[in-house]
Length: 482
Image (cartoon, rainbow, N blue to C red):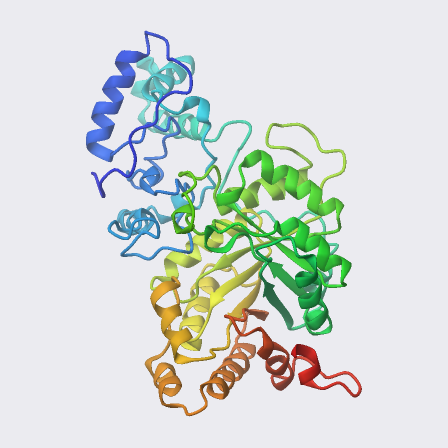
């Protein structure tokens, strides 16, 4: 049953277990360790994940793969496969793919390192499932057993399911949501926070892009490298008249920090939040931070949606004034398995995602294939999709992205055009303009998300030549980025 070698030693209890528990803990660790490389997380999902332990994922993701891995390699350790792609393949073979749509809770760390068998047996006894009369009623017993396991893995403080949860309010939470609701073709861009306390850098970038865009993402510690906080940068953008899209990564937030950050963001007038898993901490230049993560992107969406729509903290307390939020997530149209990617996105949309910003797209055919996979799961009417576009400045940049950025695919013809061009910058601009035109024609696409890829100065010209921005008065493009 084991699929990959164990990434970490089994968890130990945070408090000493009772002496009566020790024999069962030892037996469970021995048997489940041999069969499933069990991490003894105490929050077992084996029945839901085709009997492959999801805690073999180095990030500890319990709701599907991150956007940084690939079917043949984990982003933390490339020598091992992505365990979630293995889970998908086995679930598909078993006909249990839809089981993976249930939104699973983050770990209850008080149960880590302890046994689960005793809990199951005790709960089964309390429900009378082990009585001879119930055992004889096979159909009833199986249904009651399924309910038992669901109640154990879905505690009262979580109650995850596999259903779509539309927002309770139809009023737009932000200008971005309002524009999308009106059917406008929207444009968002990325603004990287400075590696310093220099607020003028953010203000300057905001001023140059203010009238061209519907919103600006504030990236959250890209490549696991510390920068100015996303919340502070978002507040600065807001002060300059640019609507921010605050990125929150599971890598950088535990469940407490996430809830407080959402309240603070809403209080400041920052209502667009993009939930991401985040680059692995091993990418950092400094000492690596810890694994596994406390949360994943799907769990973040579930928590924030419930805070907004149900006015409830994760611990069950009521929120007197819930946050006003427009929730988003990321996607990978170039994924080699679009059906798996569509399943992953359905789970995120069910959890609360209202808009999607994709990874960079250079192959419109792959994008169309991905959109068809989403349409097959009836997702295109439930979410707004902004396609990632990034102009290529040189063949060196193109090769770097192909080699170092996950889920980037470029047609061989495009690479050849960049190699042969005597003016690579003009060729890169031409390719970006062609992609924008192709993207605009595809059903289900609501706009584009521009990533400068180290070429910030070209964005005004790109938007102008794409017909998405008109120069005001006597202005010229040079004034906008010189």
